Length: 267
Length: 343
Image 1: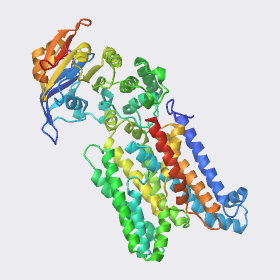
Image 2 (image 1 turned 45 degrees about the horizontal axis):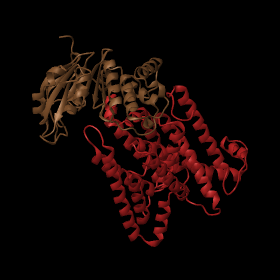
Image 3 (image 1 turned 90 degrees about the vertical axis):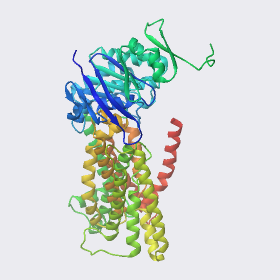
């Protein structure tokens, strides 16, 4: 027990409509680690992330933040501890990058939201750490996908959270920006922030995450280090595909290779 | 000052507010001296401050122009703020105070009152037409509220669909009432539907204030939370915003503003579209600034437009709703084209 920050204790959840349910999920996140939630479509990754962020309340079990159940915290207190970045948030109106980052201070401010000196310091630091200060005056909607994602990460960083939960933070990015964003998240985890990402990209998860949770049909199929979870038999079974795992020749991380049906691969 | 760059400081906020308020007052004073009869501004100011002026000037200013200009300053402000609020809620810069069917409901009420020819006792604080217009708007506000009400948050798309549909239903009913109306009343109905400020004395001004002031206060207090909504409801929840409360209060505040204005001035179009859009381009999208500037800017715009409308075609008066619609149509197209080009 090295001080769990965020714990999901045997949580079950089902939506009012549809058959999907999350069943007795249990996991812990520690400060300073990057946890990857992986699994096929419909396995419950995003639902689990929303339970952890307090958006959804479990029907059974409890989500606990540093010993306190999430449901006992006010919205604002929660936003100071847990920052959530949904997949591809909308971007209406031409707010500047600096204004978008400043929005992260919302849970600390009075109703009209004027910034104090300390808030400005936090905002500037968040922009510096994410290298978004170079284009701080530009209008957010004019940025590229990778730049936008960094700005949004800066804005949740300005919440000064102890945990950051990100839903598919790299889904819309090319390989260069993907590794840039994941590298940034790794660096932030180094500052004793717990980072949880939901991703479809098994190999990026294996390369950047300390631990992985593999979900299958609303339950945890396996949790552990990348080497443990990237088990070819397990992955083949969960994804219903023929998966082989090799060692990435450059990084040494386990790497999944999906083979097509016999005779369908070019090689 | 121009364009989106830094943070909103208290200094910038109060400077912009003071400048906008000054502009609002200056335009109001100018509108009092312009018209079919030009009055020297000095004399107008003398009348207002209780100084020496001819009886004729005092009569024109106090009995005819002042209530009308005041109504323009308030109604234009109300419409522009309502437009900015609906644009924020629906995350769509093309939304107007009339998008959600509130003013169509108000119009239906007014048209009913006119064509039925009922009249309220003279000592009532509001006239029959205004009362019916408020009632019609309230009916639509309640229906949309009940349709869109949900446990966690509103979907802007559902709100839009419910509002637009209700607006269409109200418009259809207006056509039906017009169809069965007596032709003499029809002229009055059509005149009301053009939207205008040629009223009415101080009773109209006094009757909108109790609705306008609380609604404006409610909305301005939500302005910072509205900023959060522009990155989507989920993002806002994650920041600790009570999204459902903000959406409901914005919808109700914006709707009440619209209802109050429509009940005295009819469905004046495009003020709520043009003014917030221009101000957003000039001063950035921060709703704390945008709402305040929209109130003063919208008021100055409508008072000025009404002055043009009542002077340009002298001795007859063009309803200001016709003028704003004629200006607004081309502007709306321009907006669409530039938006499409940007995408």
